[in-house]
Length: 191
Ligand code: AP5
Ligand code: MG
Image (cartoon, rainbow, N blue to C red; front, side, top):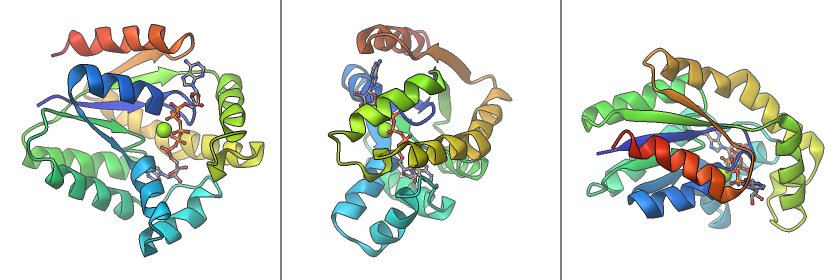
């Protein structure tokens, strides 16, 4: 099994690059943001609760996303590997993920961390907000709240994996294909 975390701030290109990586390397894509938006679209109680936090740019509670990831791992027993996108986002989530993967004896191989300037992030998200319908892209205050959550809670996740020498920083600006080449080279060298 090959398990990988694609890490980076809001708008760094995790979703865009995940689509390409899972196709090339035959991995299962697990995006907690996508799973939460699907719960919102189905108007489940979990989705309706999560929406209140997501619309403010705040993280949803750890137990909610860990529960979703645990179910998704159980639902994909024949996967060759998983690409985690937008998860883990707190140190507690990272510990929970390690425990879940330990049961499968399939630890995280690498965390690829996309490096993008704050100016570029805001530019990308404002632009997407014009057409995406994502309520958390609509104005700069919500985007700033998402970036603040990233800095105060999520950056620590990179420190967690750094202690195991699993973090590789990848330049996240340039064309989508250029960035994909960089990520692909890091993955290939570890397969
Ligand atoms: P989530 O859905 O994970 O969103 P995010 O990480 O805040 O960021 P995005 O998905 O917007 O960015 P991305 O890095 O995927 O970039 P993308 O490829 O889309 O989370 C949403 C919310 O859900 C959170 O705020 C939180 O409330 C909750 N949540 C989710 N997971 C959670 C967790 N684990 N714990 C707690 N709460 C959680 O690209 C962005 C834009 O840039 C696109 O328009 C794209 O076309 C464009 N773009 C991509 N690459 C390039 C490029 N190279 N050049 C120019 N433009 C580019
Ligand atoms: Mg995304």
